[in-house]
Length: 412
Ligand SMILES: Nc1ccn([C@@H]2O[C@H](COP(=O)(O)OP(=O)(O)OP(=O)(O)O)[C@@H](O)[C@H]2O)c(=O)n1
Ligand SMILES: [Mg+2]
Image 1 (cartoon, rainbow, N blue to C red):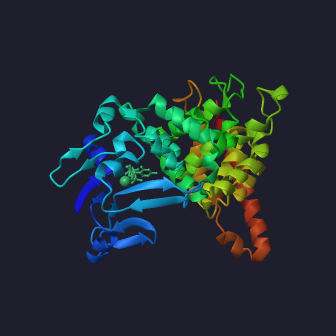
Image 2 (spheres, rainbow, N blue to C red; image 1 turned 90 degrees about the horizontal axis):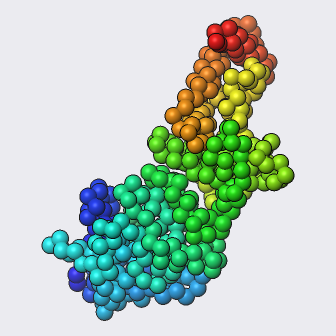
Image 3 (cartoon, rainbow, N blue to C red; image 1 turned 60 degrees about the horizontal axis):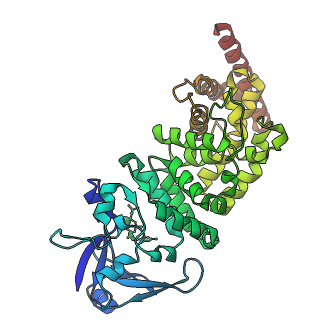
C-alpha cells in the first residue's frame, strides 16, 4: 500500500501556513489490512480509520457516488484498485486535491499549485456537486484566505449557484451547517463567508432572515452605508478586527434581523425593530442549533443594542432593570460580551470604524457601581429572603441614581 498526505496539510504547507491537522489517503489497500495494523474505523460504512498512535485520519482511496439526498445519502466505493488520481478528482477544490508522498514530492494532477499561485478557489470537477456542504466550505475558505488574495473562481461560483438553486442545501443537517458556520465566523473575514453565500444564492436557503436585510435602507446619518445587509457585513468585519469570540460574532450577525420585517412605507426608519427581530433570532437559533451561549447572547443583543447606544440617556431605573435582565450579578462576563457586540455594531458603519464608543465604559462603570452594593449591611439590618432581594434592588437603584447624577454633573 502507499500512503500520501492530502488535503489541507499539503495546501497549508505550500502556503507557508501552520498545519494543525493532517489527513492521509491510503492507496492499494483493503480495510482489513489497516485493521490488522491497529487502525480504528471511524464508522461502520465509512472507509476512514484513525491511526493507533497519532489519531490522524487515514482514508482509503475512494470514489463516491450519490445515492440520495443529503448526508448519509452517500455510497462509497473504496477498493485497492482506486488510484490516487481517481480519489483526488472527487475532492472539492484544486488547492485541496494535492497529495504529498513520503519523500515530500507533490502529486498535483488538477492544477492545485497553479491555483495557489493564482489565488483561486476553483472546483476540481463536476463531482463537486456530490456534497452540497462544499458550498459552505468554499465560502469558509474565502473567509480564511481572502487576506492572502484568494477569491472564488467564476465557474465555481456558477456551480455553487446551481447547487443552491437545486434546493439541495435544505437537505444538509443542522450540525454540519453549524460546524461550517462557526468556523467561518471565526476566520479573518467572516463578512466574506456571508457575502459569498449571498453571491451564489445560498444565503437565501440557509439564512433567509439575514438575506432579507440586503436592499433594506437605514437612516444615512446613523448609517452612511445605508443598506442593512452591508451594515451587518461591516459589523462582522469589525468583530474580526477586534478578535471577538464566536458568541459575539453570532450575535452581531443576527442583531438587526427585525429590519428585514419593516414595512417599506416606513423606510429608512425601523422603529421597534429590536422587538420585531426577536422571534426571527429565536427561529434562526433553533434551526441552526446554535449552542446556548451564542443563542442567548444573540437574543440579548437583539433586544438591547439600542439601549447600549443610548446608555448616557438611560434613567437609573432603566439601568437597574437592564442589569437585572442580564443577570449581571451572576453573569458579568456575558454583559461584557453584550458591550463588545454593541461596540461592533456602532463601529460597523461606513466612516465610523474608528469612532470611540464611550457608552461601553459608561455602562461598565454603572455595572461596577451596581455590583459594588454590599449585602452585608442589609443582612445586619435583618433583611431575609424576598425582602432582602427587594432591599438589594432599592440599594442598587439608589447607587445608580447617585452615579448618574455625578456623571451628569461632570458632563461638558
Ligand atoms: N466536503 C468535503 C470535505 C473534505 N474534502 C476533502 O478532504 C480534505 C480534508 O478535509 P478537511 O480536513 O475537512 O478540510 P481541509 O481542507 O483539511 O481544511 P481545514 O484546514 O479546514 O481542515 C479536503 O482538503 C478535501 O480534499 C472534500 O473534498 N469535500
Ligand atoms: Mg484537514
